[in-house]
Image (cartoon, rainbow, N blue to C red):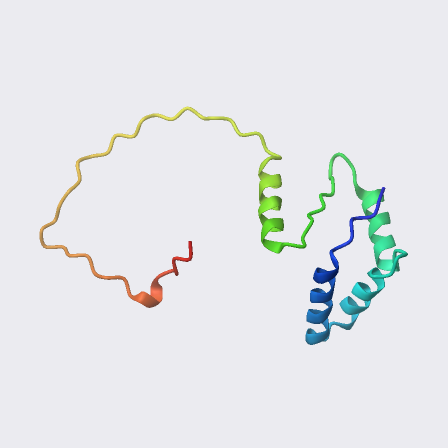
Length: 119
């Protein structure tokens, strides 16, 4: 088993800066250790764990996560592709005629209840 490809330098510096700001000493120590050319204790332990526990019945999948948004989308895409989907026959839906009520007027939704339209 080979080690995972390293994160790019800018991403490592960004993560270390966040760890320093948040005071996560343990995570910071692992990030700094992983910057050395030789794999650190954390990296070796991870490689051994993946090697020993990666089996056909319960495989490990590694998500390249330098870009978190793309990593999430790739993960969702990969997980959905693990299942076979079959088209199911659908019976046509017949809707009844719409009823109109002359005395009903729809109220405006308060703006603090609306989800922002970002896209």
